[in-house]
Length: 85
Image (cartoon, rainbow, N blue to C red; front, side):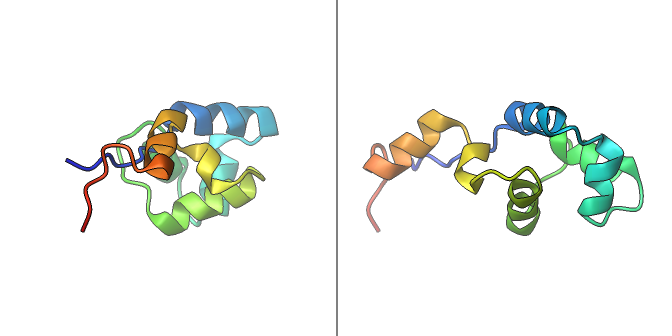
């Protein structure tokens, strides 16, 4: 079974707070009409699209790779537990 990189929601929340952005501000930046739209993403109740993840990385001024669990990225980079096609 292939390891799939998982988004680190706690890290996104921590980076958002460190950057001084509220849930409402992030919601607006991502085009949501209410705060709940972004909140559901950050707490795991909604799925984050690739486009939204790229926007979040841009807003937080970090490389998109920083938004994933580090050990999963390391496994993907080395090919560990990744099946060949």
